Length: 467
Ligand code: SAH
Image: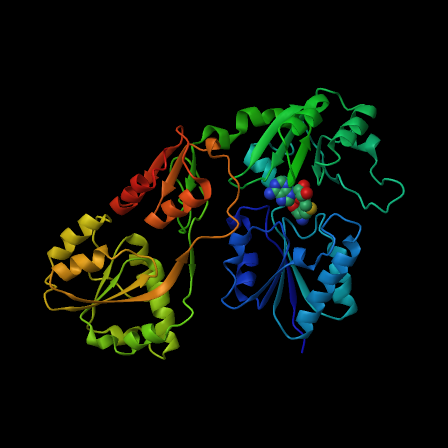
């Protein structure tokens, strides 16, 4: 049996810049074969148990070595093999699928093997870089044409196929993969008559929290890039439109806020949120204990959900043991926080009690108004949640049973960040604070600290993030 292969553009980096269609395919795929440049956070949308394979792992000599064609062949072979096994394959490519992505080689393998495929476009790095630096790539006054050029041609080519003379007449020239060869590129452009004072912008890690923009004249850009330590991946924009970036760089005008929680970004509020999740939710290895509670859930008077992950894993396991929300009939349900309340609604449950104040004190004040004396309460929790809520409920005379529904772990591969680039950092739970401390040590003076809940504040003080 064969299956269709979807070649999907993942966008330039920021996880939510993938298209809706791309995301829907990713959610259903059995196998995801992804480029090393694809942000790992996008992969969290893949279904549980999907086989996630990074193309880098297939390379023996490294990406830019002359072993490239061999590397490409391995990728193509793997796609074909998985499709022939009947798997639903998503080939997730950085940026757009059709721009500097060796698309033909992969399609050739699919055609030769008579495997169906579909192409799903993505936001290319040039668009990502332009938007996030406030540079219009074309402009009625400054550029009626725009060219995308590789700065790293096939090393086996004897003569360059880049027509530099023709490029000198193009309004905006965007270079991909050009950091290494930047001095030569600049030399060629000046040689064919591009004015030395033409504007240039380098956008490194476009659209990500680590984005860096460097602007200079053509004449100086290579020197400046070296001095500033510009590294790939980066896009280089050459043309008069770059000057517009001074006026239109919306990112510079906004407050930049790091958001450390897992929930979606917040829209239409002041500032720009950069999502840096400092926690990761993972299932437990063994659910036997938890499942036993669920099988006897009707023994309980109250169910209290302290987080939306508690809700998610509760219903996942409920399904796993062959039950559904109907068994909750007659049980009262409390939700801490709006996102917990909303997640319950997704399962058709309207919480009976949602304390308005998310602080632990506010929570207990609200719970005091209920009669919990002698009531059986089931509280699904994470492996690291503190015992505060459980204890306080106990003091109100409740009989509390807690069971671990999921694990809260520190994500690997947290990026190097220049924290001084940001205006604020928002901590959403004590675990985000602890993990921050482990990875980044302290918050610079100029960066304001924001937090949700008094337990988070306590952890900020305990971890001494400022000293
Ligand atoms: N198919 C991709 C390009 C792949 S080639 C696309 O459409 O964007 C890899 C090059 O893309 C990198 O060397 C760099 O020039 C550019 N690139 C990819 N992601 C980038 C990012 N987040 N910021 C800047 N440049 C990026």
